[in-house]
Length: 58
Image (cartoon, rainbow, N blue to C red; front, side):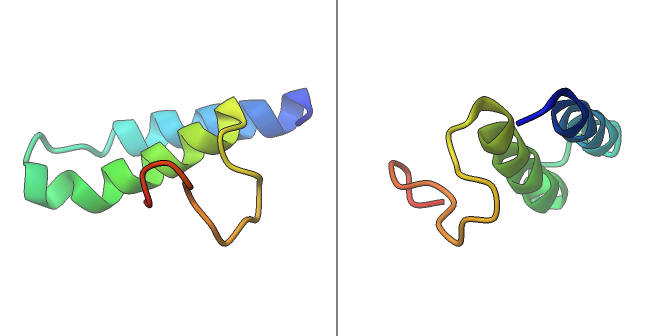
């Protein structure tokens, strides 16, 4: 992953975090998106993989 891709993922994560309401049910989908982006950022999940997470089944 190059620096530009990493910066784009970090910016998207920060943008999503700014939309969190504090309501668990409202934020569930947003938190899932943040989790998936963080996995990509950390290399936990291959980019464009149809499998999100082998360990937790997300």
